[in-house]
Length: 245
Image (tube, rainbow, N blue to C red; front, side):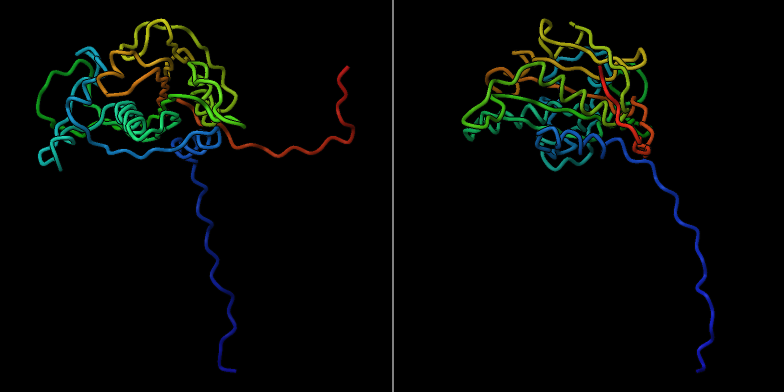
């Protein structure tokens, strides 16, 4: 009887946060049949330089750690593909030649283009990428399926792009400018006149450096370059279903 009657204070609902590009791409690639790998953000300088990038590429400029956990983790990763290709070699060494792995995460790049080796005086850029590798055969209903190929790599890349950006127009064109992909089996993905990713067969020279055997196909997409699609809107069900003639 002594409890006062009062309505609870009303609070404003928290704003709805925009979905993160990485989470969207991660769910899409897993739904498409990929298996997510989570690798270290560090690697050895030798592994980081295995892609054969030119010195003018920011991904060729290492960011060394002052106190690395081991010599094998002395620099920050500048690409997701190096650790994924090493994972292919590790699976093959354990008798698992059929691999379909992907990773979504940040890479760490020095600010500015064509930066020479120098101490780091400012925070690195951390763009978010989605990358994947395919080796061996795809799963089959009975026994092994057909071998993975470059078109499968392109399909996974398009899954990530369209999951983030919606039904955006993606132009696919051949390229020979990616040093770690086979020049005859490589393509680039263009959205709004900007290259957002690549796919193709990993160059035999690169995969041998990382210990992988047989053909390996890869794809990578820079998610930060993609626009985020608007949320799907509900539409009323029409009273009269459409009939195609």
